Image (cartoon, rainbow, N blue to C red; front, top):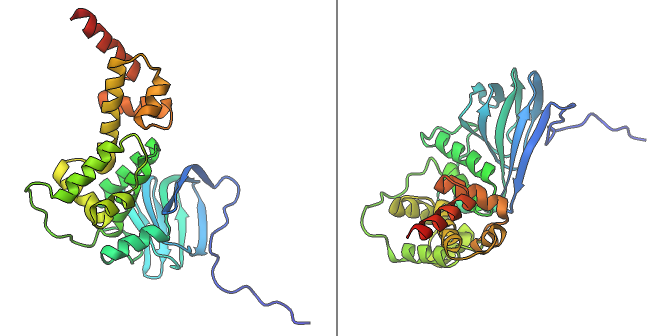
Length: 284
């Protein structure tokens, strides 16, 4: 009988003893899996590799990462890229919290259609990377149905951060982009994806996202939320429907998401907005 030899290869995923790694929240779509993770101080993660590429945005704490090209400290408010199959190890001398994004096939393939994607282990050197990472965290905290669209656009920008797009002029918005905006107005209360908008425009999703922000001064997700809040304000002013009914009619998953989004954009909760509108009508 032949005895088994020592295991070969590196572990695909490290083992975490006890409460050394805690997932505070997670979101998964066909394009990505996003986690808010806290690592305990003193945690050492032995050499391992991941089956899919990952992006990490460090919220707090300092840790060390070793890989094939050497080792380096990983500081807060930086974005780091980990290629698939790249052996690496980590040490956390202090408590650390990160947003980790596992990049699945669809989003990576989409980025490669547009240009050369990130491929080197380490910090994403683009000056825009920290702001993109912060927006990624913000969208994770919002976690409404528009967040997935926003996260996809942010991930594409990060993956293509080394690719210079064609210079954009400040002239009138092209016709295809106006059609995209019209589509968002018409479907503001329904779910729409970046891929659907791109098919409507006949353009690549990266181009749609960049051109929209360039010409209209806001991201697609910001615009969708504004369209929804505008519809909600109209209903709050002209109807006696409940907040839960208005939330669903405006495209929000529930009243809680609606209230949070309304307060973010207007500075007040929807019930107070309704009271103000009623008072204005009474005085008139």
